[in-house]
Image (cartoon, rainbow, N blue to C red; front, side, top):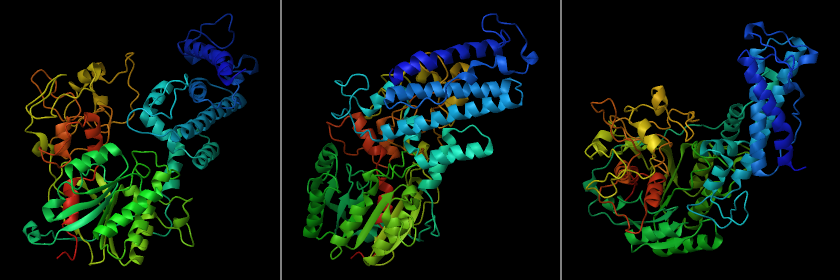
Length: 591
């Protein structure tokens, strides 16, 4: 018998029975004394259980091994989770005598452990699925091997949200075992949250090294001081379409060599910077790497800008340090070594978790002394003669109405590259997008290109957001206007930041990729109150609003062929241009 048939025909049918009986019991309609002749008893009169009338729960087999097929694995998790929840209900509702309570507790604990073990197994399957924009040719439907599916579609097949998917992929065998051991020791029912706490400790374990990089700051120069200075040409790695570098020409910095993985982003960059030499491909490809080195030396560039992929270090992502993508900082450091004779300055940008990450299986960080990644990069650059300055800053520190928090490593051979003093006050959303006309209904447009009602909004979400005030979460709405699924049941969202409006008097939350998703991280327009008690703009930010919130001008160059998804994604993972401008204005020793 296959795993699926066993689950569906055996365990699940037994589980359905006990669920029915549990509901009848809790409603005061039936005791567990007899399945054939139910006895009506009030809940408070529930007798203590004895050997001959234990519920079927205690006879359910918790030793069933988790299957390997992802669909069967997901079904297995659902059944085991239901059994664990039933056990917890029995423990709360029934007055069980000594040994029967203990037996029920142990069985409940085992079902909960099965859920966690299966979650680890499913997370490992999801982790090995490659991701990309659009369809892939190397992924297949779970049920039909002839149908090509995207990773998003596979998650939908499994009935798994992106948030749950992220959590499952974060699980490690070590964290799961530690969580189970702790639960047994403390007489608790284990859950995924316990395991994720150990994941956090594993990934960000630091030993005798600073976990904060305060940085040194200095007064900003007058922009008129750049008039007459020699142009400074740079090599840019992980360039995307060049959003972060959009304003650097104002201070005499120009792209000379540009490396980007995706062809479509290279095309955009080339149309904007026609004189730049574009090298398309991954920097960890030896052939591509050698091309970057040769081009940098040929042009005698003095500056390297690098923003390695942050997904594996971000709290919003998987934190998968085993993924080769997480190690892209090492080709950047090797590039610095290879061009050390001509290069003078380096800027590296990433999420704050990049600095404090200390993966135990990375030999570079686990020699005689265990160090974190920020310390390692600093020491390697110092070996090359750079003076290194490291700090974490917010986008709103530098003339941008967005709270994006990022770590920067500034390195120069010409002196200490100081961080610019932060703005005295943050730029608000009201200053940035408050002048734009409201978009209240699907199909609404305006005189501003890309300022139109997002097509991603569904009717139910629009209704909910009409009753969600500025700065509030839809999770706090009156019962009638709470977020609901298609079937009318309550949404399973557990975080207040989902379906939450931004505040006019503050910068926006961090703009991420897929920022037209109303269930994303605080992507909703602040809105304005109407006389009937509802609120305007029941939607995510428009593309034009995202452009302005990123710190770009309203006439920012966008190719005619670029679609909304691409535009939103490149803005959602960019280095903020005003931040980059402020930092690069502080490059020391320019002539």
